[in-house]
Image (cartoon, rainbow, N blue to C red; front, side, top):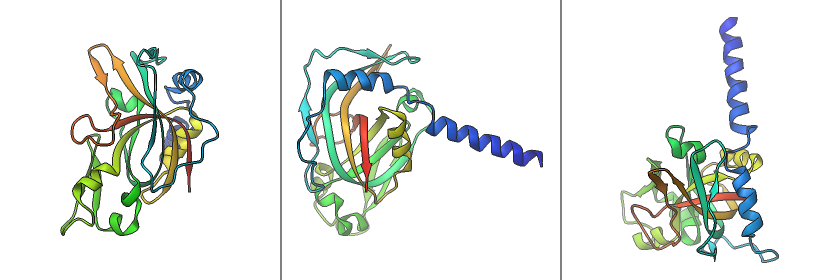
Length: 213
């Protein structure tokens, strides 16, 4: 029937858009990786450890994103091993064109089943929220220090596809850079500390590689 053919074409088109087309930041990711490489040969983090962050020269150059009126500014190298607490897709707005999803991630005590199961976790409007009907399993400050909502930019098509397959409960290792995004009369700034909360506390991560397990 005609409607079935239309539906099939729509599904194929959706798959091509989400899994084949190179992400817009791919060329930028290549340039950043060349100028600010991640440390090689070091052992992978344990999920009990906080993210590993490395300084980048404050004079880092701005890299334009082809087809977008924005520039990406690398701020730090960034690696972490964490539990996926929640995944949220975004499709509207100029931020979604670069970062189509956020991951709420937890490490240390926020990677433990007993803690995760005691919390109701959600995401909306580029924020991550938690709540509980009883006393939190760990202090609220410990929750904040050991979790974060991270805006994800994919450094290549393979990483984009892997990001879109992640689900709550997955364990994941991410390697890449924290970046700012700057446009005319608009800027999206990454957090560079795990101790902040509220407005501006989310990281913006350009992901070069991902391993889920």
